[in-house]
Length: 106
Length: 419
Image (cartoon, rainbow over all chains, first blue to last red):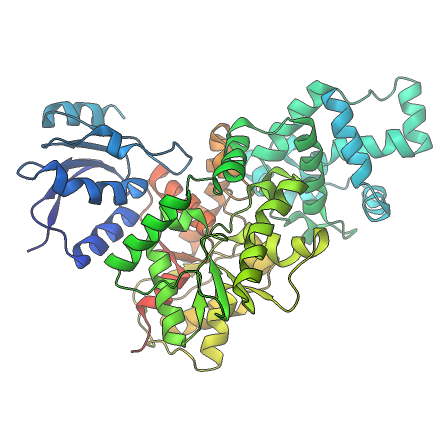
C-alpha cells in the first residue's frame, strides 16, 4: 500500500493524505506528483506523528505548491525556507476547516 | 552621482568594437519584431534598439562631435538618474538577453551583449531591481541565490542519493569530470540530479560533484557585474583545479553555460586543458560513441515538442543532440514548434527576469507566444534542457491552466536507459 493517497477536494485543490511510512518509491512518486501538479495542496496528516512526517516535509518543502497542512503537531519553524521566486507559501493549521479556508483564499 | 558611475561604465565598455556597432545601427527597428517582449506587448520601449539607447547616448555625448553639439545646443539632454531608473526596468524586466534580436539585425549588431553592457552600467550605478539584487547578494554570501548553503547542499544530496538510490560521488580527486548543478535543480527539480547521476553511471564516467564548486548559476552575470560574475565562475574553476578534472559539465542551466563556456574566457583566466560542456552535449557524445543506449520509442505516445533554450541551443549550438535523442525516444511523437532551433522564441523567464516579481505581467505576456507555438504543434509534452526555462514553463502552465506536461531532457534520457 502506498504511503499517501491523492484525492480531489474541489477545483484547484487536492488532498494528500499520509497513510504510512514512506518507501523510496513513495518519495519518488510524490516528487513526480509535485513536479506535475498545478493546483493547491491540502496535506492531511491525521493519524500520524509530527516526528514521522517532519523530515519528509522538510525535504519536499522547496517543491511544494501553495499548501495547507493539518492533522498533527508540526513545528512551523521546520517548514521555514528562504523566500524566493520559486517558493510557495506553506502553513500549518489546527483543523481541516481552517486549512481549507486559508487555501481557498490563496 | 548614480549617473556618473553608469556613464563611466558605459564609456569604459565602449571600445572600438562597441563603438562600431553603435555607429552601425540605422534604427531600422527590425530587432523589435524579433523581441518576444515587444511582440507580446507592442510596447515600443521594449524594442532592443531602445534598450541600448542610454549606451548610444553616452557614446555620442562623450565621443562624437554631433553628440557634443546636440548637448551644447540643448537638443539632447544629459543622462539623468531618472533615465537610469526608467531604463533599468526595461533592461532587466523586459529583456532575457536571449539575443534573438541579433539574428535579424541587417547590420550584424550583437544587441544582446550591448544590452548586457547597459546592465553593467546600471550595476555600477546601483539601479538593479531589488529582487534580482537580493539573489545576487545571497549568492555572494551563501554561495547560492536560492539558499543552497553548505548544509542544504549536503542534506539535499544525501536525500537524493538515498531516496533515488543513486551514487553521488563527492569531492573525488582524480575524477575526469566535474558535474555542477544549478540551485533550481537542487531545490526544485531533484529528480534531475538523480537522472544525471544515472546517466553518468551508465556511461561509466569517472565523475564527481564538489562541495566548493556546488553552484553553477551566476546571478552576477544576470546583474551585469563583472567582478561578481568572475567570483562565481572562480568558485567552479577552483573546484575543478583542486580536483584535477579534465572536464566541467554544466547541467540544465543556460546562462551558466554562457558564463562558463564563453564569457569566462573573455574576462578571466580559465583552467588550462579543462573542457567545458553542457550535459546535452555530453549525452549526445555518449550516444554517438555507444557509451549509453536508449530504449527506442520509450516516449512515442502523445505529441512531444522541444523548447530550444537561448543560451544552450541558439548560442551554445546544441541543436542536433536533443533532436537525435528525441528521434530515438519519440520517433513519431516528436514534432517541432515553429520557429525553432536557433530562431526559437525565448520562454520569457531567462536573464534573471523570473526572479523579479514586478516583471511577472510582462513575463506571462511573453509566454503567451510559447503557448501559441505549443498549441500549433499539438504538444502534450514540452521538453527542454534548461531548468530556468523549465521553472518558467512549470509556473506558466499553472498560471494559464494549460494541459501540457513539462519535462527535462536528462530525465527522459535517464528513464529510457537500456540496462
